[in-house]
Image (tube, rainbow, N blue to C red):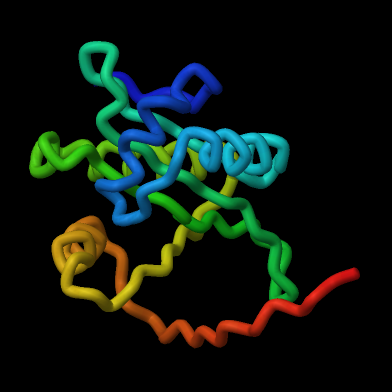
Length: 148
């Protein structure tokens, strides 16, 4: 298995992977999304390739905070193709990002995850890899305003 930076040739296989994450998306939606993400220098996307097949993906965002000058890395996406789960792909992607972060001088990685039953195995993996639960996430959906 090879882990490398995402490129636009991966878009079709990435789109096919989105239902396994729980967010089915059209190819056109993903093209728009990835163009925005790839144009932002604080976003990085890495893919796991096995026999020319995209079998996993991890997305990260680099953050600077108000509390100190240290760079923080947030894992914003992690998905493995359903038929490849349990083979260590997610673990390899996380380890890849951890090493990549250390090479940048960043030693703080975090992620947010939902509380749904479908995330239980993911939570077990994060804990197994040394991640700990440190807080809560509060969400409020705001109604969209009509614009002229």
